[in-house]
Length: 167
Image 1 (cartoon, one colour):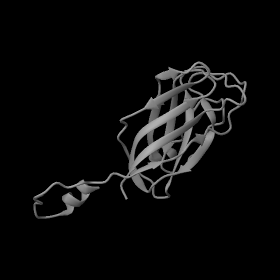
Image 2 (cartoon, helix red, strand yellow; image 1 turned 135 degrees about the vertical axis):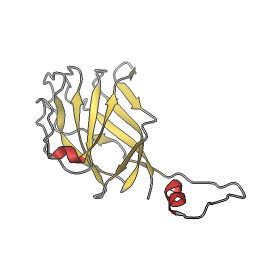
Image 3 (cartoon, one colour; image 1 turned 90 degrees about the vertical axis):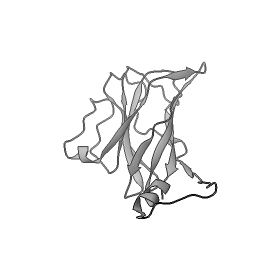
């Protein structure tokens, strides 16, 4: 944000003493992945669950994403993010995005490296630096598997995002 302000100034800015810039983080909390067909065998490239949306600041930078694998699968998952609503892919079907929805595509966050804690696993994607603008103060997403999980009832995954706030 400070960079944006400095870019708008016409005169050079001279800093004569230390400046402290306070960074504000927003935490989404744990977001449940809805619509998962428990006990269903997934194949790579299929949607895991249904689409969802969650509240975010109007603009910011996604810095960290955490995925809780409560089923202890440890298989790569992609979180596909959009800045507006999109046509969802049915759970357990090949993930596909319409040409019209591509204009709202933000990015994909990949959870590929897992820490195994015996009965569950955690994957952290850090130092993402993923800038976004969300006019509706929401992001939409859907998960896609890059493996072949078989998720048991009661072990549904969750994720969270840490966002550096611009506004």
